[in-house]
Image 1: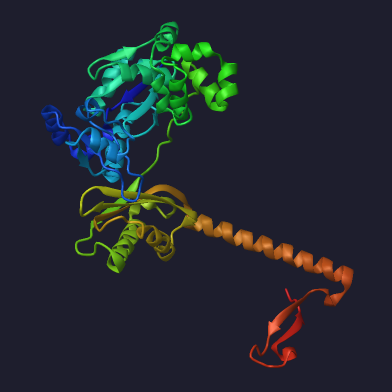
Image 2 (image 1 turned 90 degrees about the horizontal axis):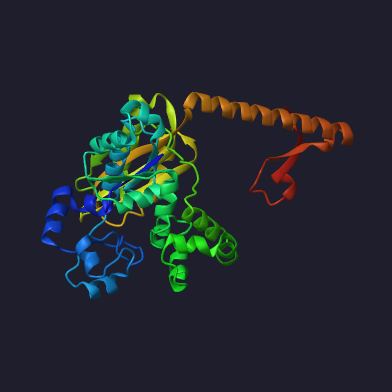
Length: 397
């Protein structure tokens, strides 16, 4: 059985703060995440009061404000969202679950290996709720997609557990809008609405061949999901996370902020937990002075432990900062091999190239004579006489 954990409006809750979002919900004030700076002007997650006014996620900002003039826009904070989501995933892993993370607020894990620890599906779900420490919708079913449908249909204090035959019959009556939670099938919602397809059962009755003919691979996948079929879970591998942060004070932009970044790079390289390993991918984040946050993932072309090269690569991304920063953070997403091992690989590569070059020169001389391989030596580059600028000399090993 696959369990799905769904935390409704996770990004909105984190952006507003736990206590604040509760107060706003009780007061019935419509809330929405403001569009990121420089992105298309579409609102993010919205509260229940905003949905009641006709505002939906992804709606154009002008249309959202026209439908709900009292709409309160909150700046998104991807830094806090990433931190809170990582804590939630670690909480699920603390009960022994192998987790496949989806978008923030959505995660899956297999319950088969946990029934021996907790006794039943219900006890396993209760352990996951206790580990999270916050209200969550949980559903369990044979596949990932069916578990997602169960989690969306249940309430925060109850869990919906479906077996095989029951899951498929129950899934046939669910709305076709569930396909919007999969990136591959989200594009089908609009054409299916024009065709009058409202439930997954109606989508299944259209037939795989007809859906494949009209929508291609996305139609085949949608038909399989409607039948309760899905791919196995892709659980995330355990990883070690190393991070440092620093309040920047008055150095909120420009060259001063780059110097703060240099200090963070030095501190990160000096951490004893690094154990001589190089960096393959890092995350640069910032808390903005005006509110909200900014986050950028940087993957290096090769594993690095040179502070100058790391700073050069990160300073280019620092120019993308949308506003002055109040705090700067740097975290390692993936480590590379130890620096000593990497140097040995490079030396071995150089030695093999020199050996191949010597063999090529020897073969050329054996075929065309001793003058077949020559190299150019610059003697007097500023001379007006071409013959004095460069001379040819035999290649020596």
